Length: 101
Image 1 (cartoon, one colour):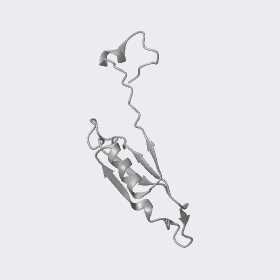
Image 2 (tube, rainbow, N blue to C red; image 1 turned 90 degrees about the horizontal axis):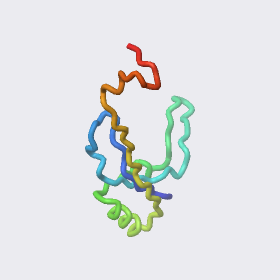
Image 3 (cartoon, helix red, strand yellow; image 1 turned 135 degrees about the vertical axis):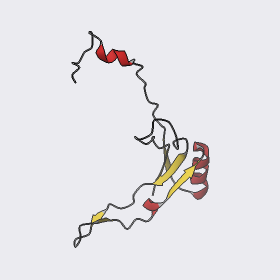
Image 4 (cartoon, helix red, strand yellow; image 1 turned 120 degrees about the vertical axis):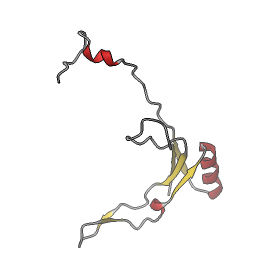
């Protein structure tokens, strides 16, 4: 049972970086989900999947995993690339794609 330590991406409904500065320790699923034949619901016998631990720093999450003897994998966050563009660039004559209403 391996744990994954990562910094969650921001919510698509957020314009800022709120609630995305913490690190999360999630357990990888040990068994695959199964479909319950009567109702068609998906279910799992893996209770570790319900555990999600939050930490202020990556080092705290790593220290917890090492102290508890949990094998872990750290996923570094990807920095977003910002394309700086003015609103007036949407109406340039040299624009590559066509602009329509």
